[in-house]
Image 1 (cartoon, rainbow, N blue to C red):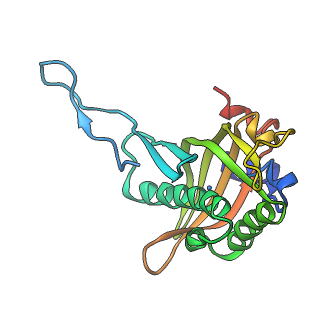
Image 2 (image 1 turned 180 degrees about the horizontal axis):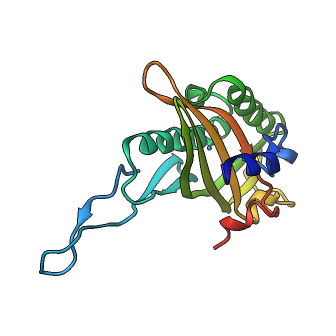
Length: 211
């Protein structure tokens, strides 16, 4: 997402093994209007924060933009469900595959490969993944591009057999990064992710996610 065309060139392809996946990685609806003070005045919108429980030890927190329109809300819903669903697949040992309903085309393969890599290497996760600075940067017909900052510094990569954090934590657990999702609205009106790209946590493109 980011000055769409330029950023996509900068972004690396979705990871396919945990060593690479360690560089990768998927609410309230629109905020209510409220007026401040006792005298009439223009309404203000405040962003809301939504917490999705993936498991007792894993959650995805979404910092929603203030008053997103209907399509933006639907796109963020899809991105949120993809990310939460991917982690749910990991922590359930691959039994929960609902995340595959949020992706299509190339993104389906990338998403499946990412989850499988964790399972093959007997890895799991614990902690909080935070999504913020969610921004639809372009819409063309049924296609759209969504930018999102992802902060997983509150998450730890685990040995799935022992439940203990691995000694060497990945880059994605050390610094926020930029995630780009290309989406398409189907004939059923649902937005699904068809392309996933990301910028490495310590790259120039991800600097905008620092705060």
